[in-house]
Image 1 (spheres, rainbow, N blue to C red):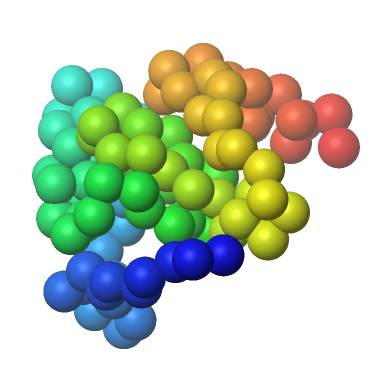
Image 2 (cartoon, rainbow, N blue to C red):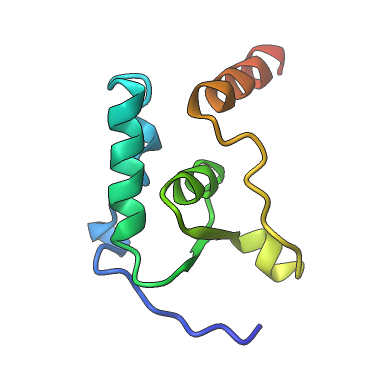
Length: 98
């Protein structure tokens, strides 16, 4: 896939959440600030993620998220709904219906 792996200094057991876990405990502007802080800590523009919320957080933080499955399938990663409130409403609807 012609990928050069560059680890962030926060990985493995030292990993930090993308910021989505602060919703809805913090006001949305503070959640987005956490997402932006995490994105800034990434040493590359394109960030490989394996969590759907991380796709949205990296996009909100100004990075180019690349979902691991999309990389394996040679497909583009689209953030789709990245509005945090709408995303969580969609997620809750899915949980409620399944």
